[in-house]
Length: 320
Ligand code: NAP
Ligand code: F7E
Image (spheres, rainbow, N blue to C red):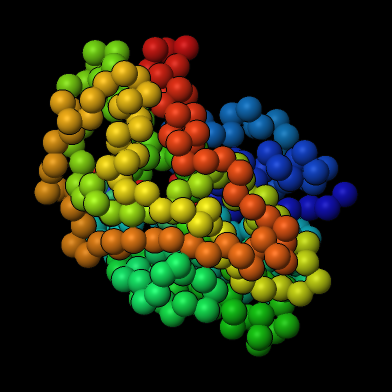
């Protein structure tokens, strides 16, 4: 039986990846940091199938112990301070977890289980102020936030360990991917939660920042399969994972309100507090390498993704 260690198990992607690996017959270990109150919402249904290990990406001792204890065949590093907006408010913390944390987990593997295959959760935020469109594996990085800068570090340290120590280490450059399990502060979920609360008479207005930003949004359930595929190849490599379509925040808002029979113009308020100090105006990925080499393609359309999230939040906010 193959063994996988997932960091970030309580997050959106950690939960979908754990489901996928369990279906494939893996023994799944999840690195979980200590919290005062439980944050198990995304993985409650898998609680008895995952073995949890206590640890934090900033604590090398805990990571080394986790790798020694589990001897994984595959390690998926999904843990991060992943909210771009907060990375300006907590730049040092973000660098420590999202950037240096990658070196910590790579060191733990190098010292205790060097033949483990490693996946790093790189991000389209590394392209930032894009120098070409669409963005592909060879597009130069120009990060626009402390989060993006930390991810560039994590990306290159992964490449460096691959080249220095001959480790099987891959980076997936994933474009935005969403789901009903998305954190509530990200724009898709903020919108779908608010739309349903407005529909149910529980909220009056929706305050948003830049409605013109464009993103390449896919479904998280599709994207975790690409992570797994990257670790099943003969040679380690880096891949862009995206839909190949881009949409504005405004289109997202329109579809979400329309789906419950409302007009967004009656409810959306533009609020400077949600405008970022430096914006990423457009992201559009070219997933052709992943298609040709991994046989991977995004399946859920943008419209279906938004509707799926609205339907889920409607049920949640009705208390179902
Ligand atoms: P998420 O929902 O924010 O989950 C992040 C996970 O990291 C949570 O389990 C969190 O644990 C854990 N974590 C945070 N700080 C930690 C620390 N110091 N030590 C150990 N664990 C820690 O993120 P996601 O959307 O699933 O994304 C997964 C990864 O992909 C992240 O690295 C993200 O930056 C990257 N990524 C995401 C996207 C996207 O569109 N979703 C795109 C590209 C790349 P708690 O529950 O305890 O907070
Ligand atoms: O913002 C705009 C905002 O916070 C998307 C993370 O998973 O994907 C995610 O980062 C866009 C931005 O995601 C609001 O300015 C407008 O242009 O949902 P978001 P993100 O910053 O793209 C990448 C690939 C990651 O790697 C990250 O971990 O929406 N926007 N008004 C707003 N965004 C938020 N959050 N809230 C607003 O009110």
